[in-house]
Length: 277
Ligand code: DGL
Image 1 (cartoon, rainbow, N blue to C red):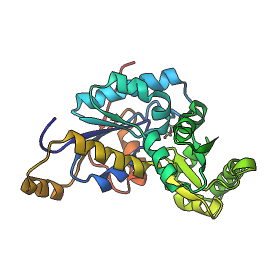
Image 2 (cartoon, protein in one colour; image 1 turned 90 degrees about the vertical axis):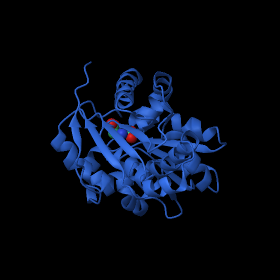
Image 3 (spheres, protein in one colour; image 1 turned 30 degrees about the vertical axis):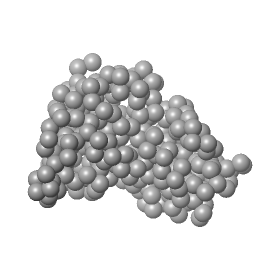
Image 4 (cartoon, rainbow, N blue to C red; image 1 turned 180 degrees about the horizontal axis):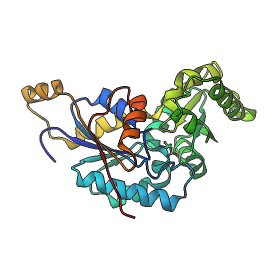
């Protein structure tokens, strides 16, 4: 591992993982990042384990070939369905979003009852439920497939999105889970809906964003991986801004346009990648 700046590879099915990159940049500003968005093959949320695992392993190898020393699987669906397969195939440490999300939920809950929202595939895998039950917490998982296209449409504060979210959360916070006190955002796109979800979720509910907890988990991995650096060098590096490189399997122009919404600023260095099947 280089004694200088770390290169962190971030993988997602598309643009949504940029919410995780945004959190990473806040917690670890002194690293370089290579982000891979598999925009030609999204959405992953409606695909099978086999397909998602194959795509994700290809992307992981691509990021490794571009120098990634640690891989962040920012996509909840890829983490839920294929983290083991990616970890086995990779030659560097791999961090997914489910365990950090479950950890944050465990820290936030008072009554041990959690609602998790995510894609159809994430919910069917029960990865979050297993991670939460391993912490002696009760979980209800709810698939919210309409939310991803609504966010990509830019309707993050739209009456239609609010109505859709009201129906989903109404069904999730019902029966035995009316008093659940934590809502886990188990999908890369949902952090953009935080203000809306705060309005729609029952007032007592705390919202846990797996992007933030994942960034903290990556920072602690890096501390173990990187040798201690001289203070002067470290200070110089902290002042340096993160270098960001983006790889997208579909249109570069579209990646720039939509990506800006997720990351909050312009994406300069975007390259098109053609992964051969
Ligand atoms: N990135 C996916 C996730 O976090 C959402 C988009 C998709 O279905 O590809 O589950």
